[in-house]
Length: 437
Figure 1: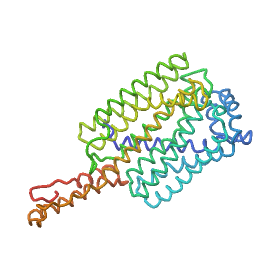
Figure 2: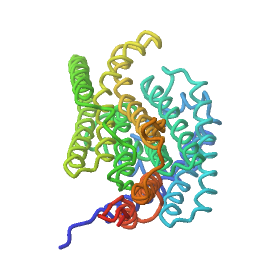
Figure 3: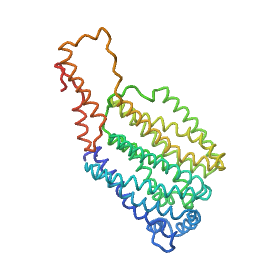
Figure 4: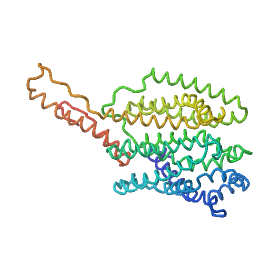
């Protein structure tokens, strides 16, 4: 039996994401109809009642009716447009894979406008709803507000990267935006699965468990997807690292200390604290393992650019507990939350915020590497005209460097096997005659 190749895994992941989006589109579009008109059909509630129990859904409807009255119309706008995004997202993936550039751009404009409209509806709802009045408590309100900011920021950076002609950065930001949007169907899946693992909990309590790891799972998926599509082992102009061993060691030590404080705090809250701790630590450990293993493998294989991106994201992941320890007291004092709710909210947003920051640092790293080096002024000794031999050998080298820069800075939507071949042809392999082979 043949071992699955990288293209097979990518195709399977694309099919899975497409199936999840298409299945969730009608659920998202009709999710709030019963709150606006009692008795209206809602596919999500019907599925959830069959997956768990009708009483589980009835209790959930009773606890959500009050918070949704604060801004039902903006929330309906948010969910209906969210259902449209579940259709536009797979369409964007398909047009990019098929290299339908014009259709991809047209659908991209529709996708960006729909994202802004959907997030505007969510923003109006959050502005009209006090954090303590939100479904599942203030921690969920904070998570929703953070997701809103991350989604708007990622789609904006993706659009700007496309306008500037940087498809590699455009791809990273749009994958991160899609990851944030996919937290909605993933949350609904956990509403139906977690009651079997944690029986006896209400939907509000299940929701509190799910939000602690949805951010880390989503951003890890976006990182793995972007690294799988970017097959460049090297990047022209890239030298050194922005996360040298002293910086990485300091991030690990600070993260370990903050994580120990978080663990100690959660253990003081009994069974609920231990449950929340497990819900956040397991995905965090998985993300750390994936980043560390992939970064080390890239370093052994000499793929400096891949190793640098993994290293930057791993450093950001180590700092996520530091962000948690720093924002928990702020939530407690500024928003008037109790220590338990403030800490759980800080844990829930840590990985997502730092992954967004890491994507920004990676973008700056790429733009910095693409910046041409400053020209040196010729000295008096070198003012004499070059010899014919040096002119003959310098021209092909400059052409090879230009070809290498073009190959590294342009990430096309061709299949991966053609990208690797194009990158290999563009490498400046110089023979004895001075001409690239």
